Image 1: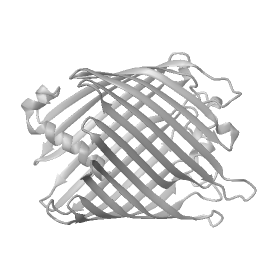
Image 2: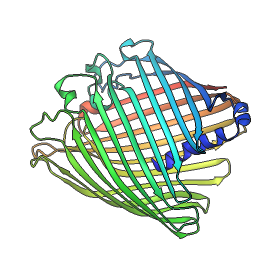
Image 3: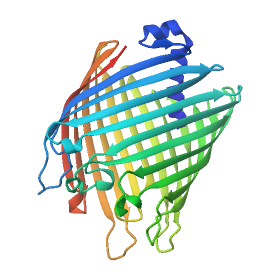
Image 4: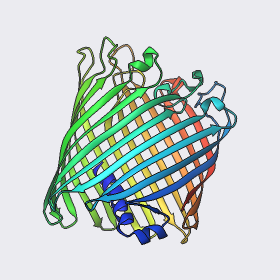
Length: 401
């Protein structure tokens, strides 16, 4: 959350620093706020809307997405504050049961108390949906008559101690995430939950552009309707140690590895103890070409069978600026999910999801850009009902002031 907030709030600070410049960059000055509107829209063709497996009837449909957003940015005592709202409407021309309307609300602030003390805070609310065949309906999308909908909220804060000239920095953080499905069937009630996390991070400079990082997080996962005899509630401890570096041999990144334990409240569920990691590397061999690689290992709450999901993810992307207005991007991701099953009569479920994506981007004007994109997803599992393949091709546009 720290790095993401810093990037977002840095942009806010820039846009509110000079109201004249803000006006020139497509922002509307309204009292103490700069109003930043935008509109994203796309039209795409999808060849397997509900992610049906082989042997099941597949739905082919065009889909349009219309997503306007408005951001209000200001400063309070010289500290940036941002509020945002976005709505997204998806319409399937040949499958109206898959239509959806999602709402997103966000508030961010970065409050610097003095040169050594700062507080970051963020709140996000989502009234969203899961496409048929994803999330809880993975492997059963064709059995649903509409997408699953839910309400989710995230709010958290960080206290940062350290200055730009100090060799060390301490970050104390806490956050809460809630997830509540709108459906009232037993299978959905047992998935409503809240996750509370507290943690601390210590960064120590060991070279001009390199830091040693210690990151500890304690999580408390509680289910709203604890209706299962063998409860899924658990406590987690996660400790990672590594380094982070910037602008070294045309690369920036981080690499952390450590230990994760997940202990269930139910004695008949097996606790998890294992190795976690987080790695992210950005390589820029040329000023107009960037390669990114990331990988991570962690545990997630199950959305189907088993006690937990042991995830190992890999992502590789390349962006290239061919001309001043023309760029392209390629991306490959691999998600390996192992559903840990406590019953010795059944084997663990192993899912492998490969995603291939490509886009050609054209910036027609400062306020208008287009993108031609293609995406292919292929899921392979030792549970045959989980397998599916879906491809999508389309064009999108972004409009600002």
